[in-house]
Image 1 (cartoon, rainbow, N blue to C red):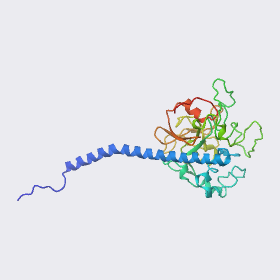
Image 2: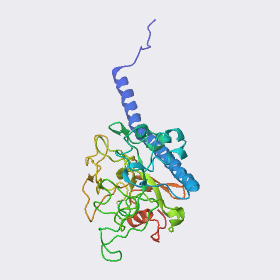
Image 3: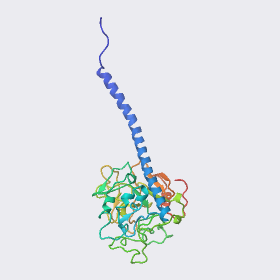
Image 4: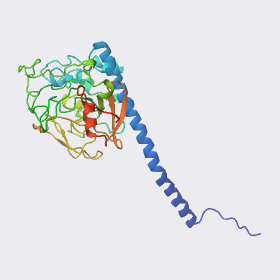
Length: 335
């Protein structure tokens, strides 16, 4: 008796099956990537939520929000240090000595303080980015709101009179940076607080929640930044020049960050989109960093009431700029 049954598949049948599998993969892969991207965005938002709640807990205990930088500027601690006990990192915090104090060396590099600045914390790291370091010191992905103009917290261009054509007034911020500074006064060593020049404001002034006259639900607390590759200091939030952002740049702007006193890579790196930057401040465009992320279409941001929103790159610039100010009185509406 003849047997008609065949063993295995013909070559044509195998090719058809492979083609079907390839089509299915092509259809499913974007969906899988979208799900992964959504999960990473949610985790990133959860990190910002923890940072926001920790800052509000700090305010409840100390009656002020966190200082953006220590009272002596760039290198003697930023908000990432005093927030640690409120993120269940009390033991790590105990390793940091003399926060804001004027010591001979930048204090994030010295002694037991280096234990802190070499520690990578998940709550400060967005899962969409690839963790980076500067030497052995860690970079992270979140920054506090330094206002609607520049880290110098003055009107732009420098020296302009608010109300005149082309002058963008500084309208307050929930966190102090290089207040009422200019192109040089936040840089020379040693620093003084209050400064030698009485016209200069203190660095890292701790501000009360009651100073946010725009309302806590209309004022940004924190947002995302990207970790620069190699010697690009963006994301190195242990340093004052990378610990904040301003809303003078829209989210994921094609305009450059201004990394005065540091270094940056305008090309972004092999796994980053272009990250425009310059290291030179000018009177019209001085020291500032914009909010940036690797999420599709926007950035996560926390507001001063503790809520977290995803803000599209297409947000109206006047609205985004107004969200950076704490005392502007601007109408915002939906965003």
